[in-house]
Image 1 (cartoon, protein in one colour):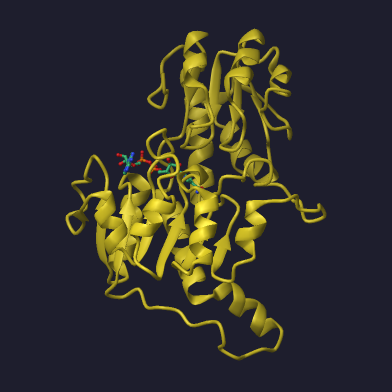
Image 2 (cartoon, rainbow, N blue to C red):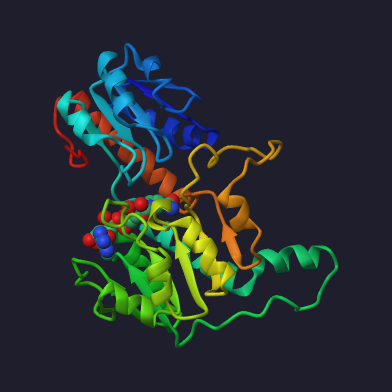
Length: 330
Ligand code: NAI
């Protein structure tokens, strides 16, 4: 079996190469390339049985069609989300798609709380001020989370981990999900509108679907408390960015922490520090003192990278031995 890994970074190889040394993967040949999987690069997969792609790549209709023409039979997503994959077209051509459903959900939840704390206590500003010999506290006032209400939207693996972290902070935890998580007996489930109305901290952990697209918009922002803190580590498309910018300008938010945002494709995981930033909503977001943006790094811990590499190779192994693995989507 031959796999072409698209968009390989040095840290991907650090975790994948030791996995490949396992005896059971002896028959699997892997090639790493830096190019991302897009409609323009998909043809590079000619002669490969499988391709491996990541969360920010374009695995839409055109890409899947080219992969089919190249003879590719398996798409390995080395991530949990697969909203960037055209599953219908893959299914039409009999291309199998596997992902890594649950890898260290705590890693993403911890990053969500880190964003909430950083934006709330202005650590991003404090770090720079102290380095410049400025020990004044102006602009650094925060709020205490203890005793306040955390609203978790989506209590699957990551949302449940975030709920437990918020409970540990002494917060009252409320949540919204169509399928309440029975292991969270300390959580009160409410309708989405009530969650927006009651929460001091709102953290988004549901997937991006046609139903959840732009769930945070000018109307739902209007339902929120003044001075709310909003964190998104799920998918950028959950928030209508222009409406968020308007809400921030109208002083609705005490703080906002974003690990994901609508315009992230084309910039996340790349060093663009020497480029002129084009007209961009992200630039506007970055101009606000109470907004912290990170580069889709919620997953990026040693534990998660290890688990992603192991599960990705395991998914390939099932295909190599002619079986359907547990993480296949079709
Ligand atoms: P999961 O599948 O375990 O949980 C998702 C939960 O959302 C489920 O309980 C589901 O019932 C619920 N849900 C679906 N539609 C909903 C709606 N309209 N309203 C409320 N709840 C709804 O997924 P998991 O592993 O917890 O991941 C959540 C999301 O986190 C992923 O979809 C992905 O977009 C994102 N993610 C981000 C990462 C990062 O590095 N920032 C890394 C991994 C995942």
